[in-house]
Length: 158
Image 1 (cartoon, rainbow, N blue to C red):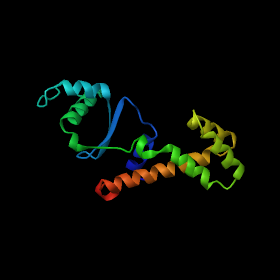
Image 2 (cartoon, rainbow, N blue to C red):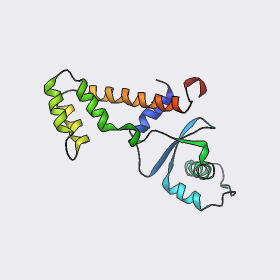
Image 3 (tube, one colour):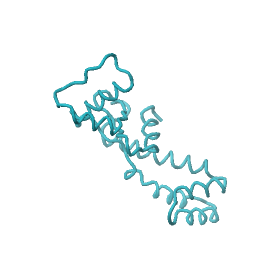
């Protein structure tokens, strides 16, 4: 797994409602920008640049937010919760289990409210939580690789 693939996989599991996570094509890096900074950047004139001293973390994030607002075509959104379909990943995990008892208990766990938490708790109780994490990581990696390929960002182009 490449460094970029690992970063994408990790961020797919850490989606934040108050953060925009995107790939900045010109610099070939993943950026996280808070919605607060994006909202502030939208209030700046499109031609105005951020004038700060040497960038600290906040200044750098503000610069990134301004660039994001003024040059949205430079950014690609990473796969999000709609692309990931963790519920579908849980169903596929259940389908591949050899132990029918485990499969039945996990199938019950994903019904109703709290399905994700209940699924993880049940997998842990059954002693297969590490199998679940490995399976989920492999699924996330497949999604990340498909996203990289779709956006022409294969290893040799990064």
